[in-house]
Amino acid sequence: MINEERVKELYQMALCDQKEEKAIQKNGEYYRSDYVSKELIKSFFTGTIAFGLLLLLWGLDRIETMKENIRMDDLLSNSVVIVLLYIAFMAVYLLVTAIVYYQRYGKERRKRKKYCGHLKKINKMYEREDKLKV
Image (cartoon, rainbow, N blue to C red; front, top):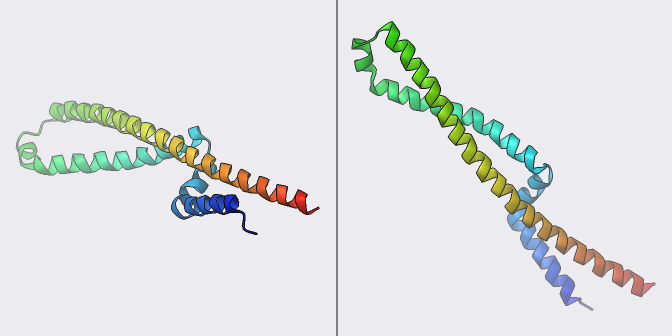
């Protein structure tokens, strides 16, 4: 005889498997702090590349002006400004990254708990059936 409750639970698990399989598995591999730290490290490199590309585009736009008015003291003051801009850019970029991945981890964690809840219900159903058969 078909157990309708078990079929419903298995259907819910199949939906989770189909939609969220990679996210659920990836989420289970890390603690929250490790997951966010890993993403911060990746974002540090991508942010550095993004800042470098923005600086390159800005430099290409201002190349004519810089060729005419280049002086050593301006170069030093400009490099200090560029370093300060880099620090500010990275601080904002990494803060946004931390917030986004902290929330994303929480969302995936809730989905994983829901999935585990379905597994527990199914296991209890099978245990009850086994006890009734014996």
